[in-house]
Image (cartoon, rainbow, N blue to C red; front, top):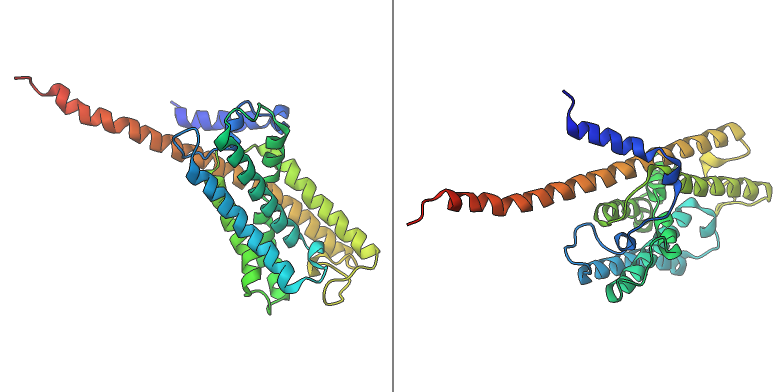
Length: 271
């Protein structure tokens, strides 16, 4: 006899591979404005958390520009990703604040919520993995700097943690959106090379592994990055399913506690 939980898991996974799952429409706008773990419809701690996360990324972006602004920040995928994290977290803080004061403000399928959903992508995990696996060895003098850790480690930690506390679902078919961002960056790097652009040290490439003077290496790096972003989309979906399982498990335990306490009273004789 097959395990019902296994069948349910397979059905959920199978349901993800449908064209409708490419859509950014969701019937419940509240899931984008609440935490999976809050009990009430609105929660001040959740709003404060969202603003704290936005402040964390704002401090990183602002600190980078104030400390060492040279115009080269905008050519790197790291800065693209970190700025996207800032946008996502600030945007999330704004909609959480709006929802806190007016729960009926957002209609189902509201474009503001769709923009938020599409921006919360797996780019930070890709940036962290690619940097520490392929790029950190080419720049050992900066690998241990605080800002570098901020951009290539803390960003992923924060965004993965956020995946465990948000309430909206993750769709496997949404892998196309971070994939498009990576493709746009790769095209940008090629155009930058053709235009004679250099990095901060005068090299004719943005990253050593993305040197279009050696097209074989660059194309291999592009293919590996695209494959990785697909893998991380699967990881993000796994985190979402794990979050739901954890929530259901915790909810079930809370429901069982009063029942287990009431049982002895029911069985005890009355005097």
